[in-house]
Length: 335
Ligand code: SAM
Ligand code: SF4
Image (cartoon, rainbow, N blue to C red; front, top):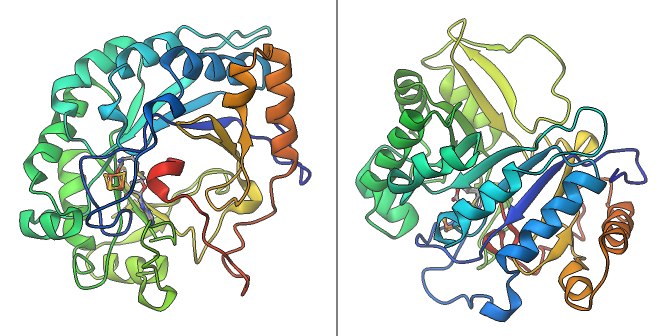
């Protein structure tokens, strides 16, 4: 197991497949610039699958989410998904990992069926606005319709539940929460708002300017009746979930900054260049690529990963006056 010194067990692996992207969201990347990882630095498809196999068969990982950068830009994605879907946990149940993808949706209309056939279970598509002009301002690209098409294709392919991730930004889409929720309910998507975090490459985040979970709930309640979703406590789920007008539709709010869920975190992360990160906000990484390429065996790599997790901090450190933004931006860590 991947267990840290606070007793948390990481069963959810986020795998970044590339740091590249075809959008330039204001809260993630600068308008221009930002050097990409060089090809030799990236894990190959075989190396990626080997590390996922070690995580699933030796370290108790049960959920694998592919992300980036934009994971649909990774040429070998369908093959990687297929090979990961064939993995089985060690032990009596021999379960296969649940596989999901976080994507900006561009190109998903073309690949949704192939991804489903390869064994992908679910997708999260990021969409911040229903207004094409606001989309262009937020992402600096005119690709709004591509994202809507990608979402529809994911639903048609059965990659369900299709979740939509939304970040609200002051002056751009902060007034859109109720419209987005009405649209998501109508289309059968599950909407989740994510608080903006200090992970942009250009270090433009300001706490006093962010739209908080509290602001989002206040805005939604102007049009909807929200009741906490019954069932188990929030646990390791980052989103607080609410039934919309009595259900069954739901909405999630991920208050990573103002309502952190670190105490129940069950995540471990692998960057596209083979570094383990124990947290989005970690300032240290553990190099598995070096071990892989110098001939380390599976057990040796698993031991390195276990050791890395023992160094996982209790929290993100966001409330510490000495907080330092990690060197890598979100696009290079894998969101
Ligand atoms: N490109 C894909 C996408 O946009 O879905 C996957 C990678 S992206 C880094 C993953 C998620 O992180 C997206 O939902 C995006 O909106 C979110 N994200 C990026 N930068 C963020 C930030 N500074 N604060 C909060 N969420 C952020
Ligand atoms: Fe690209 Fe996703 Fe970052 Fe937007 S949030 S720039 S789509 S990696």
